[in-house]
Length: 208
Image (cartoon, rainbow, N blue to C red; front, side, top):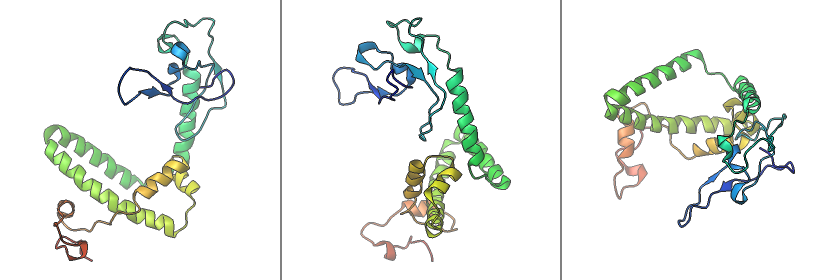
């Protein structure tokens, strides 16, 4: 979304009276010119990764009711949405493809977890807790491989289908986690830490 001068404004803040938090929005319809807010002049496709569509779609304020919220207006969003979907297609096509066995495994895992969430939620929560530990360890191993291989962050971002900034945050999140070991109950043991005992002396320390 662009203003009349061609600039892309920051978030719109809504004054709700007293309170420490002030809600904000970057939705296109928030820029309706009411209550001192910026007034949108052009719509275009946009993505959190930083992509902006080349095509611009003017808002005709001669037919829009300036006294009513913009989200209530009959605005044609087909152009910006189509541009954004085309952008997503390009990103997905450039991302690293998952091997079919891994995709099938992830789909089966998702189906089993969704079933457990309904039929036995405690089982689902326990499985998710174990998965968080496994993900942290595998993520640490993959991050180390990326760093040792000196892979450019641009290549990492393309493979993940995201921006360089988001890819860097994603990789950094795993930098200081420990790798899991193939030991039954390892996730449960990991969550139980003896008080007053160093990690090297802990009876729950991961075996080498």
